[in-house]
Length: 354
Image (cartoon, rainbow, N blue to C red):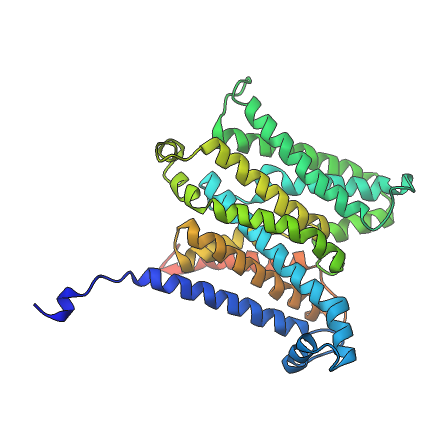
């Protein structure tokens, strides 16, 4: 018997996946350092690192980085991770690769409250201020998600019977339809200035968050991301079906509520300060599954890292494609996401279109 026959089998995939996650982390770090040097004041990677390590070395670089670029890039990475992680969780919950956080009413609830704050906020001077729209959007996302959870329970006993994920999906679609009708109604009666503000907010941007926005988003994002990662194993069991997951000891109803609340918390905070940023919650989980497999223990952290890197990359594009003007970052993410899915649709396999 040879030594080779005594060797234990090695799961190459189990060795490769940690290396992929480490590589994604390094890629994100490199993109953030590169992004910190891009702008009206160009800085080399060496100048960026020196300013971060020793703020007294270069007063100009330190001012640009700490006042403008550093909070912006950190916010972009955090928001990208939240949107992508929530998208991966929703796809696992609904067992549908086309699911995204919007299915549970988070984005539409935030949009309705934000538009209401823009249109009617000026009528109450004591409420007007730079924090009004983000705060209203965050509360709107939480209220809409809470209403969706209550409606999902009602669907179990109402005229239209639907339970579990089906009831949650119907409730989310109903809430999204009603809230977007409200957005359309208020947009119709807004004036020109309010219309511009609504359009700018709905296209998404990480430019106006600053340290204040980062301080608001960080705790909500931390709780959301940690909760989603904690539920990776139950999500793997849920992939077998709700009944099978219950037989494996998963409290499916509790899992469903926890994931929806965690999604609302992270996506609500991200949307509140950055507006609506599309496609990340759909695109990043697909990329994560392509390179890491189907297990949520790999897909969730992978999607978070990819989402963070994609939004940092999209912000680089938003600042440079039409410089010195700046594009809304939501337009860039839509362009990246749409191009990727068109590529998936049109790529050829064996002479056909897959």
